[in-house]
Amino acid sequence: MKTRVTELLGIEYPIFQGAMAHISDADLVSAVSNAGGLGILDTGGDNAKQIQAKVEETLKKTNKPFAVNLYLMNPHIEEVVDYLVESNVRVVTTGAGTPKKWMPKLKKAGIIVIPVVPTVRIAQKMQEIHADAVIVEGMEAGGHIGKLTTMTLVPQVVDAVEIPVIAAGGIADGRGMAAAMMLGAEAIQMGTRFIAATETNVHAGFKEKVINAGDTETVITGNIVGHSVRLLRNQLTTDYILLEKNLVSDEANDLSPLDALTTGSLKRAVEDGDAIRGSMMAGQISGLIQDEKTCQEIISDVMEEFKAVIQKYKTV
Ligand SMILES: Cc1cc2nc3c(=O)[nH]c(=O)nc-3n(C[C@H](O)[C@H](O)[C@H](O)COP(=O)(O)O)c2cc1C
Image (cartoon, rainbow, N blue to C red; front, side, top):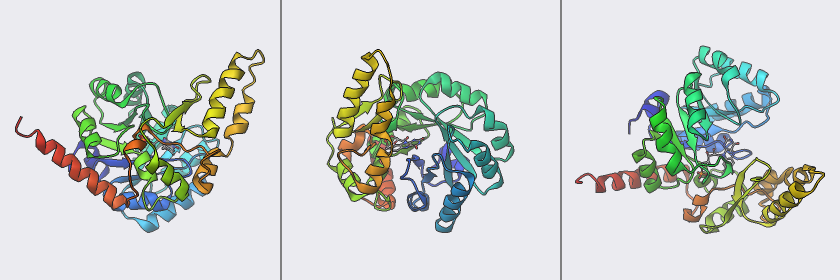
């Protein structure tokens, strides 16, 4: 299937596996890319050497295009960008800020840069600084989120920019993909669906929580303090939301006890499957996900259903 995004990246299907902290490693990324989508490596706060090791491991497992997610608050960002421009990495997605400072270097090296954006204004700014496309993420998504939904944000960004739009947040099947494409997106990005992929190296307890979740089982922490994160409800989220309210109304306004709750909590979810005190970041679409599948199955099922849905309207 061809869109401006598949053409730009040289991928078979317009499907990205979103970067997921502590989750999207070489195994998952290469499985997605080998299945014709775009795998995206998580790099978090890694230094250049650590990222180089992840990239080299991925290159051993796939010869298809994949991307590296550049975390813009990474304390090692200067050396990471220097590494990226010298490396074989051809596609970079960015998150947690503006890549403006790094754009001249990245673009000069011929790297395709695709920032994740939560609003129309930021999408326009990314176009002004010569981003190649934007990933528009709605607040249905798992992980750190903005305030607008995929349904409302995607068409508004599509109207406001010329560059291609990739829709993220709340998509896990071919119907979701068709909806996003009807809104003007030229590719989709899924995160939560890939947590329950066979090749994903997370604890079985985390996969089970996503597979067994119902439609109302995610909550948002950090809404009051301004770092909104969507994740599956458990003791950690209940404690966090209560503490957040109490601390903000307290005169001292010392928010550090919140850090004590969350430090290491994503690792607890990913490595130990800790369903009580782990940050099981996942999106609202968890309720739709009923089984573990290989990346190949996820991508081919999404594409098949997408085509069937589109076919239904061919005669209208
Ligand atoms: C567990 C988890 C971790 C995530 N970590 C990151 C991250 O480190 N950087 C990033 O840009 N997006 C991150 N995301 C967002 C995904 O890349 C993707 O945009 C999002 O999951 C799409 O929405 P969905 O969850 O409804 O599929 C994360 C999402 C999840 C579920």
